[in-house]
Length: 284
Image (cartoon, rainbow, N blue to C red; front, top):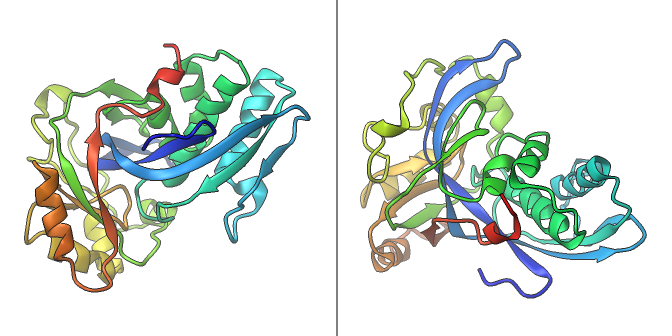
């Protein structure tokens, strides 16, 4: 994911597991998960402009500008700092919406990090993580920029060292509503809490995705993807779905399995990243 001078990566994330351990009085769910970035995702072309306007050059179809996470991230950064500069932002979208890969959150985080740099604001990583949380629970981990064990609503982060892996990621042709899945009365919310010391290797052993059984019942396309991929390795849904993944030790093995997929089954092969490609833009 090498960036051109004005093109910046917004990588996908995988939830290697996702446990729902409770629910706060305000309705937000308490989670435990491990986030890992991969070398595949969206990209953004961002250029500063002097007039303070935030212009989206390729708006997402059906998404009002005021609801677009890239636009909201830029405006939030302006409001927090009083910055009078603006930006032209073009999103090159590769990740499916409603796929559980964190595409919108990653896009927003890239906008925060890049404009913090281009506008010369000098905000710290922790400050940008706090701003990102106002945009969505997954935004802070992209700013954090490294593999992480996450708790709380996903914003309490500890770094993790994960073994190298390549992933087959399948993208069923459905969009899953995260809000609807978390609000569903059949979702279990009482998985016992883990400690980071109890996680080993690829953190798939003795872990699971609490949202997966519900999504599989509601979306047969997700069930079919998991069933097919499970013939070759442990298959799991990421986030609230619909995307599913399996890990392989070698990229060649992942490529071989991906080449065997049934006609019409879409997805990609990607390698795990230890750090976000833009990690070095921020001072801790």
